[in-house]
Amino acid sequence: MIKLHDKVFTPYLREEQILAAVEKMAVEIAKDYQHETPIFVGVLNGAFMFVSDFLKAYQHPCQVSFVRLSSYHGLTSTGIVEALLDVPEDINGRSVIILEDVIDTGRTLKKLVHLFSKTNVKEFKIASLFYKPDVYSGEYSIDYVGMEIPDNFIVGYGLDYNELGRNLREVYQLKQNNMINLVLFGKPGAGKGTQAGFLKENYNLKHISTGDVFRYNIKNGTELGKLAKSYIDRGDLVPDEVTINMLKDEVEKNPDAAGFIFDGFPRTTAQAEALDNFLESKDMQINATIALEADDDILVARLLERGKESGRTDDQDEDKIRNRFDEYNQKTAPLRAYYEKQGKFHSINGIGEISQITERLSVVVNSLS
Ligand code: AMP
Image (cartoon, rainbow, N blue to C red; front, top):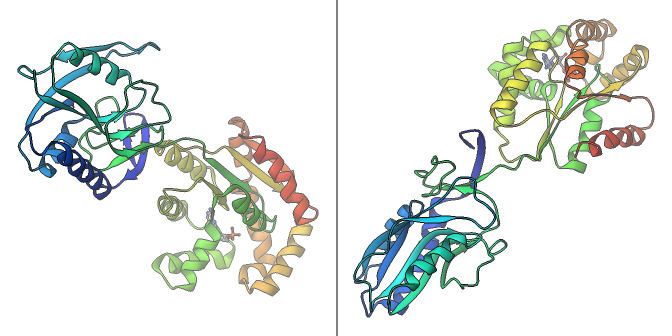
């Protein structure tokens, strides 16, 4: 993932894929032109990298030249394109092949065709490394295409977003911000983990349970596990710094996720603030915090039952359970006000059949998009 100005981009085409497309075009064009000396005309600025790699792949007699076109900022629907560097001289009677980086609406292409229509070339052909058939509305057919791509905004390999990104060797696409990021909120035993299991399937989300990550680390005897164990055994919270860094790592491990369910995190105001800042730096945000509400006595009974099955020591001792509730009341409960202030807090009755509770949660999640 990379950030250019205010936007986040994710990897889309690897260098090998791009070079394979360039190579394929060179072979196709050589088939048609290797017995003459065509003039390749690169369209600046975007095509400079493509032209360079194309020429390395085209090992037959040829000449190279450039035109430079510029679109005014704030294009109107008709689009105004201006020639800054005009057609090369002495092209009359020669075969000209335009090398474009990307053709989308066809606006630039129209101007190019117009520019060259004043000349007396033998043949005029268009070769574009990338082509967006879904948005192309021009009449001119494109003679050579490296790769057809969907209508996503791309950068890299010569292409820019407000002049940044041209030097990237790979192509990235703009990250569409239609992620759903949820915080499941509630006391231990409220059913967060159970419900996260359903939500992640139904909405294709990545479930991050900080409690599960700690238990995994304890089981595997990692440094993190050793550090967290004493706190967890007492039913105390693990220090914020440790938990926050661990959470960030878990998010970073899943750059392609369609969204996250945060279960058992944040549990303190410092964690909530750190989460907001971290997500913002990735152009992400929490969409909703959903609390599962249930009485303490019901929760204690549930946890003791769970402790028998799972062997979780912190679920087997009522004192430890009550200590976790105290931690919740002191440190986690204030987060309700934190998220209410952001207009993101939703409360759900956490008592009933599991499927009924899933249904109540789904109503909230469906209302988000
Ligand atoms: P859980 O499985 O969510 O009930 O978490 C079990 C234990 O892991 C808690 O009692 C804490 O000791 C620790 N833990 C889990 N999440 C956090 C968190 N966000 N902040 C601090 N400690 C946590």
